[in-house]
Image (tube, rainbow, N blue to C red):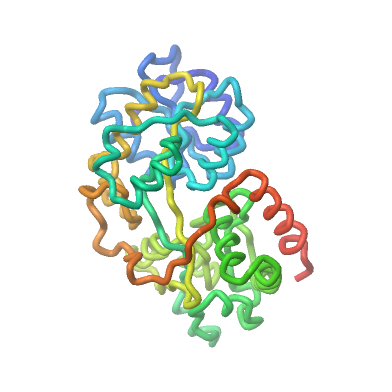
Length: 347
């Protein structure tokens, strides 16, 4: 790993639980950009290396979950220590923009993006720009399923079957954008009250709520649980490594994620943040995904797509209501209800 110089403020921010993907050396370089990175660690590291090689500038990457990035940006309002909010859930970035915590920027790379990405960037007035999309679902360990003589899950409703007691892992929606996407998907498919009834029933089958959205499917791959709720690209990634994982797009239909990059308002290096945005929206920035075996659908039309990547056209997708579920108030209300009705419910 390259050694980079960085601000003391970035160190203090990282101490709160994130993984700082750099070594310490002062004073800071004027051209260095500090990125809150919601990717997996290997992808964050590869992006850092590619950015530095391509631009000649230094970068500090602080590994965060989406929920942790939200909390840090809000806590540092008026004196942000980071420049970029990277791999942000679109709903999360929308909420921060409404709070005045992001800076609008229309990169010259926007014209290279798929129509869906250009539309979302424009609708959000360029306070965020999509870098990829992914489809929500789950995966299961075929060997454990057969060993325990469990039925094959094909739909969301199947996950409330008592046969799967203690066989499911998913992330906590309070810390994970993946899990919050799942909760909002269920509520839109079933209606809010019926959706919470389903989540409460499924809770009896959940053996652990993890911090990270992809932790459940990794546990399933290792045989530590049978089913992991995740995005399909994370499930495919485990199968690609040779693990006995089958990927499922739920029969009722499912949600999806739009993942964006955004500039934090008032960050220490605004010009570096713009340079980062230009890089991450370019084919060179998005092609890094294939080098670390990531299976998302990139936003740049000219970027490489892994041949094993899920095809959104083959999946029944719902229309996500980001205005309802993406606002700070809507998110906090649903998380509070989930905490009280689902997480604290007796098993």
